[in-house]
Length: 186
Image (cartoon, rainbow, N blue to C red):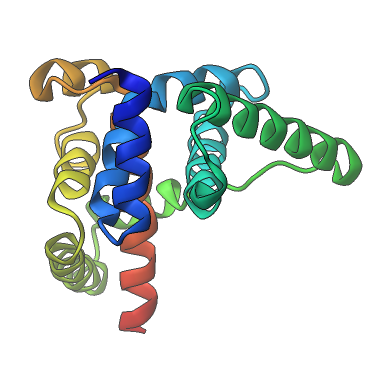
């Protein structure tokens, strides 16, 4: 089956309710999307957030993909337009996207000296463990490799045989899902 036909079939399956099939397209095209995003931003956290926004926007617009062009071409145009809109808004507002709570997660995972802080840290780690159990296992694995094992994306890529861009998306999604989990915990 030709790639174009395969991707059209994947899109149809997603639209028919098999949402997990979207991961195939994300993994396949994350490098391209990050390439576009990196033309517009320097900060890694901003690149991750923009890439995530692009994949969400693409998912929301899947029903408009008719297969008249390659999926990659269609996604590329969405990515390019989204980044252009982002750049206009940055110039207009003169502000950047915020960090995806990575600094807060790092701060919470640091060892503390006082007994009260030690108790808080242990409680935080228990909540974090529960949160990691509640999210997609691939996202949790990438998150733990990055933040618990302090691995570089390159090392993670070699170990998991997944592209660096796809791993950045997984870590971003882990952060996003964990943030939602933490907010639900009060």
